[in-house]
Length: 317
Image 1 (spheres, rainbow, N blue to C red):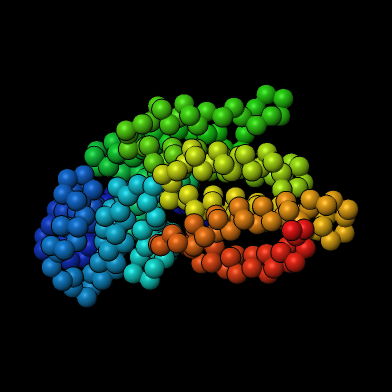
Image 2: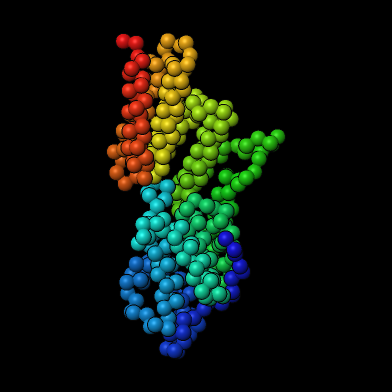
């Protein structure tokens, strides 16, 4: 993302000037009123039709109001909100804001940067959010105070989750996620902290898998099981279940290979047990309405049918 310094003053719409409005009644004041006092839904629905010459500002107001309407969404526990096209609302808003900035260079950049910062925050990208909030340069005291609080909060959170840093002796930094969750419990930052803790736990689990060079690593399985227990409220819970299902499927495939080319008489029995575990997990996920993993689980169940038939033919009864 190409980031540029924001201007000092708010930008007024042409329509505001034509009505003789003062400098505090432009887009910036409407934005702050929506953000800090009234709530975006009533602002958006209560606006009269925008004149043709102000349509660029109507577009910006529309993007901003959609983001503000969802800024309270707990994106750790709830699925990401979507826009009218079914896309991730916050990803979409960032793209739309960048496009608006290109069409209107130098206009209302304080609003654009602040809204982009909110999007990155809700997406669980604290470094991007922090860098974007720092670009907000405004003379409005309320917005400046809000931005300073955002920057301070993100800097504190990143002390618990240092990005791309190694600890003493080149070791990974100490896991401080539990401390962070406890410190921010009940605050506005709690969902973000949970997202970061979950991302960190997923990365550690994947490191367990990759460090052994084996897809069927026992340490990897234990890390996945811990993920499922610890982050049971997460909107990504079925993503973790799918990884565990794939683990058991890979274990089954390894035992099938041993059974076909090795001399282990228990290989087919062990393959059957692993397939049953995988099937149970995929069946569970395949019934999870509203989650993207549902279709993948249904497809994996079809794949397991062929493996199951091969195992059944070779099982010693």
